[in-house]
Image (cartoon, rainbow, N blue to C red; front, side, top):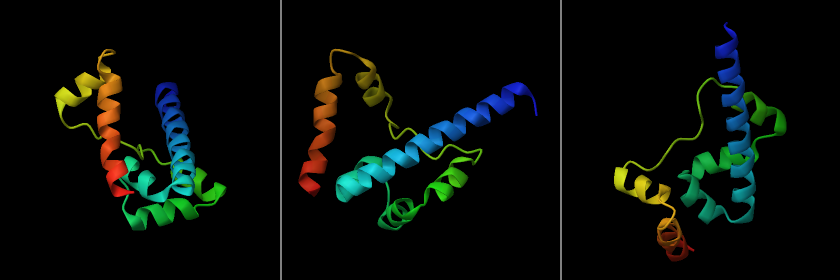
Length: 101
């Protein structure tokens, strides 16, 4: 493997591990809100919550990113990137969580 590919794989592992640890913490604090925010089903949430540190590291070592962008609409992503409207968009995105809980 070239140094570039090795570096990219190490970065993917780091992102994956950070994502898994964040997901576990969020699921522990507020399961319903975390499932909504992360886009996880109940079954996936159960698996992620139950991962041991060794298992999390093994899963994180995949060459595939475990997380993905959920903004399929260009307008939403553009609005989030615009500094003036990001607070309003973020607040609007939190409304469904309050309705679920």
